Length: 107
Image (tube, rainbow, N blue to C red):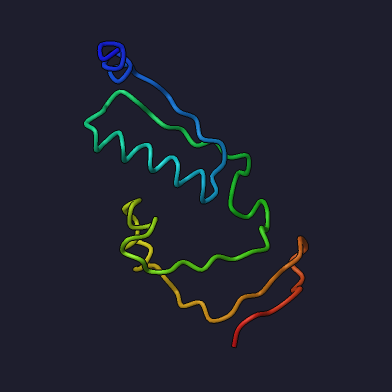
């Protein structure tokens, strides 16, 4: 069993991640970081996305991220980069698929 596991770990592989959203990018980054941390050089990851650009679809939602040194952004190794690019979130608009404002939350 140990020999089979060792051979599997030495095998070159390709992982495809479908979707360039938060979950897909987090999964791809996690796999890449685990390969690097384990000294692996044989695997590769490709992220597939159907949209050609971020402007192809309006998602109609927002996201608020907190600065948490023990949270998922820190474990992915991107917390400080995100914090540097952060803009304070004090209000949120909710849009429909045409971009019409459906609601407003905040001060």
